[in-house]
Length: 267
Image 1 (spheres, rainbow, N blue to C red):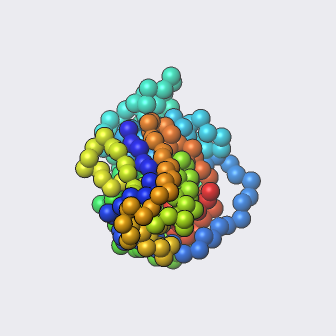
Image 2: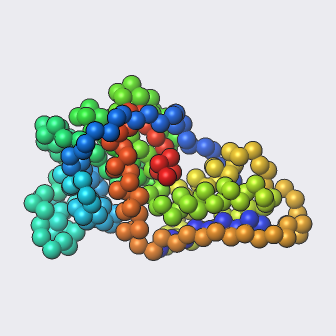
Image 3: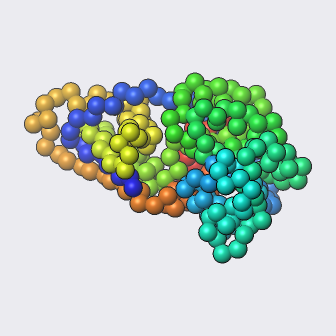
């Protein structure tokens, strides 16, 4: 479970995190009538991957077309997700093999990457080579990786969405924090997570980056001079709460021709 809140009164210690947003303007292709989007989930056996399988299966206009993971290889992804009926899609360890089968269908395809920062660059390059867009949601993705992917996607005219958060609620919290920040001199970002090693989360870093880039100087004066208090809070109690954001990301990325950093660009 995770919680994230901003209190506009106290001190913030990681407000100066380096901005990791190299995004250029968003360019989109025309939106013709669309057949089902075929979605490959890389990291399908993870908790968020299993939730994605269920959400995509239920969503209109898209379908799970491949499941990639190093665990449960050969097992039906529907059964791994405890669905009522199998999807007749075995988990495969080799991403390239799945990409090849989807590219032959000539359908629009998207690869959801839930792996890690060490493999994401190669994964996106492979997906792009087969004509598939990518939605990337991995922890601790580095700025140089995002920059390299941005240049690669621009040359290939192929879309990619790097989403530090898929939580629409967290994005709305960020927007509220930015709006409030012009009226306060002190800021504190507070978060609680099950695993203390996860601090600070990508959500907290992104809020800090967004506030830092506004040109304001926070926490400079003594706290006793600040009498106004404003607090916004968002709790993520279940990974399923991220699925509306994921479905939105899939629908948007198929029209992109470059890399976009942040799901908030589409809200």
